[in-house]
Amino acid sequence: MSSSSTDVFTPKALKLTLVPTKIDTQVHNTHIHRNLLSSPPGLRIRLFSRCKQNILLVQRQMSVTDDDLDNFRKVLKSYIDATSAHSDNLHVSIQKLPGKSCYIMYEFWQDRISWMSYLQSNDSKDFQRCIIDMLEDAEVVSTMLLPGLYLCVCKFLHILL
Figure 1: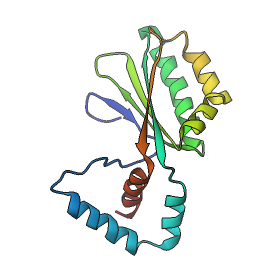
Figure 2 (figure 1 turned 30 degrees about the vertical axis):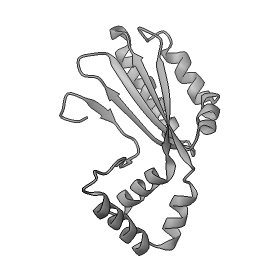
Figure 3 (figure 1 turned 180 degrees about the horizontal axis):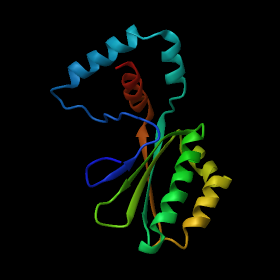
């Protein structure tokens, strides 16, 4: 657990630098270019062959009843472990809002089809069945497509640095 007032669980480390500032753009691009050229060719191929045109970010907001917090955390940990182990999942992160029983989960998937397929899996269905009675309100789910190549470059740089 972090020492700040916000709890964050990150089973997989993923460095996201989505938009460099205008001042840093030239330095940033030079840094990317230099690291890509100096990296082993096999590593470059493995990373970029998994990059799709877009990556799907799924945000799930869940408000949990106070009586069910401990059980919810156990079920949530199991779900994170199973989801993180899935081959099409790129990253899972959970944030608990301070002072509330509200959790926000961020899931990064290779594409929309991968995520929709995972929703039909036993792990996903079990999670939904377990939490349905633990939530104060209906779960709020939103999705966004992100440029996949840029995120892969950032992950690549994170590996090199």
